[in-house]
Image (cartoon, rainbow, N blue to C red; front, side, top):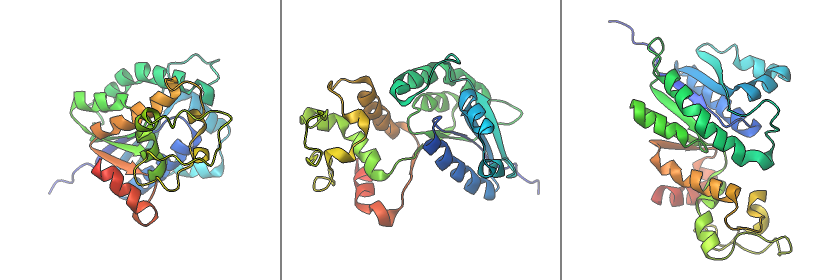
Amino acid sequence: MEKQDPAHVVIFPLPGVGHVNSMLKLAELLSHADIKITFLNTEYYYDRVIRHSSDGFSRYMQIPGLQFKTVTDGLPKDHPRTPDKFTELIDSLNLAIPPLLKEMVTDSNSPVNYIIADGYMSHAIDVAREVGISIIYFCTVSACAFWSFHCIPNIIIAGELPIKGTEDMDRLITNVTGMEGFLRCRDLPSFCRVNNPMDPQLLLFARETRLSVRADGLILNTFEDLEGPILSQIRNN
């Protein structure tokens, strides 16, 4: 019987340390299952990783079946790419990545079966749908964080966001179902501490999180025994 080629998965994290590290671990696990992995980085981030790489990162480059490729993020080289410029990075990725990703996954020399994309890269869903392959979202945050981001529109409507600078940071946020009794202002990330409820970064996280329902599957950086009740909320919604 002719041996089948291994499945080929493209993994594409957001260019940030926490996102890349989590998805590298996933890439390693899938490689051990005899799955071919193409790990996609932006050129800017990959250059930084290589120039400052530790032995830990070098280890991944020795894993059989795991290859690294780069694409442009569409920003000029002198762009700071700092957290306060996050929306500019996402907007640029949304424009630059789709044609490059489509070209990669349709390469006849190495056809791709699945995409595992970062949870803030909804443009990858459009590419997957266009070429007819499955896509899984990997949100590298906890289930509680993901669910809180998903509920941002409800929190805004209830008047609990944005968090103003002089507020009691122990005030409870009561419009995240299942977390009403313990989620405080201080538990939410800094992009929730803005004056304008229409702040672009605040709305971006809410929009991208809610678009996860378009994916064929969702991976969260957690496990059932740790966040079971919140995982149930996510499944039911």
